[in-house]
Image (cartoon, rainbow, N blue to C red):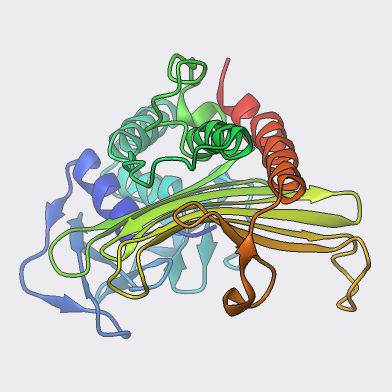
Length: 309
């Protein structure tokens, strides 16, 4: 497991921990938040876990916390040597240190933390109007459904916005949820929902936004993406991408492998080299729509169904 800076900060604020004074810089040079619980200072590592500064967590408290997750020694999903790798892990340790631990309290705090995080996950769907062909119009409609499926918490699709989500603690064992965001310089937002066989990602930063999915298909996989570039890092464009691999364990190309991109700005398509782009054919548009629909179905079945009632 892993815990982002935003997840750590939100969890500790939800818990009511005291914010440590002074500016803390992680090993990678990032300023990171720190919080004090019963005299122990927890800070984010700057990567994907939490560490302590100075006084360490008493061994008997750490062992009790690990036991709650069925772990007998550091080196597992929630606790590592010198690190805490999950949101529930840090909440469990904090409550035990303060002598007020109960599973119900940690579940309540976990639910409140994720609800706070997920309420800020919306990304605007700004792009280009579709090119006036029936094929491109159909592609746009499916792309809207795709984007709203990837980010079910911020979508506007009438078929999805009334989804009845379970409490986060009811699905976190089946679906991994990672959220990260930053304001000020280099602002960004990112949400990742994943299982062993599927992954859905959306993100926005100062350069644009993207929706991205990976779903298993037999021995292979389908990788889909919907990207918008606003001109800062590359020319303004909106692109839908398909990468289909027949056998993920074989790096050699297969005749049925597909690598296809279509620009929604220009209506051009290409495989590997944009300089060789040509007008998208009806067959290429249909191929893109077909794999988008498969990806939508798999994400709903493998991720959303586990998160909703």
